[in-house]
Length: 278
Image 1 (cartoon, rainbow, N blue to C red):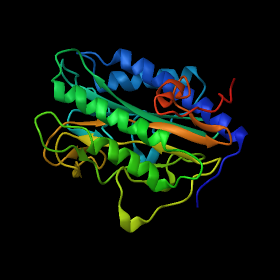
Image 2: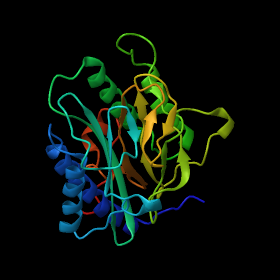
Image 3: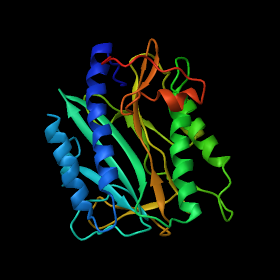
């Protein structure tokens, strides 16, 4: 069952989304050469505490940290620790969430540590981020869940990969419903799987976390012995971008973007709904 939210509930999710946006801003500034991933986790903990929110990652299924810190070939669910020291040239995907009055926000981004990154890494992150925005732009009344999957996959497949070959659209992980829980129905693939059908119709009150994960090589992954850290099976580096979005009677609103997604969605001809917090 898909949980349909009222305008008042979406406003609470916007509050949680702004906490996530603040975590992103603070951790992006802290993701410098010499910092450990545990340092970044402490930054996120401080933001959540200052904002009077709760972490939806800490303790989730036994997860031991406030954020996920996924470096280089780690796709998702990397556990912050004091042994992983960021180096010049690394990339790191930071996935963060927050709860306000029982309502969740969830978003991720990929950051470049230091300087001197190879052009293919810069393009990898750009393609992943833009595919996310293509998916967010497909969050329209009358569309179905598969239209978001198609928008994400189509964007990625149309981008030439530096050096040839194809980008790997990660198969084992995708987006999800979100609301009173962090992960809810429906599951959202980042590619079209025709056997799954078209999925539910998108209606006002529908909320999703849209999160493509893309690698420079294989779409396949494996989980390490810690039962959390997910890496590409061929060791190629990957990027992860995510935003939480709600569909309202007045249009979509990106709950984890400071400007509600106004600037980026305008590039797709989409007008966002007014910020429910004014």
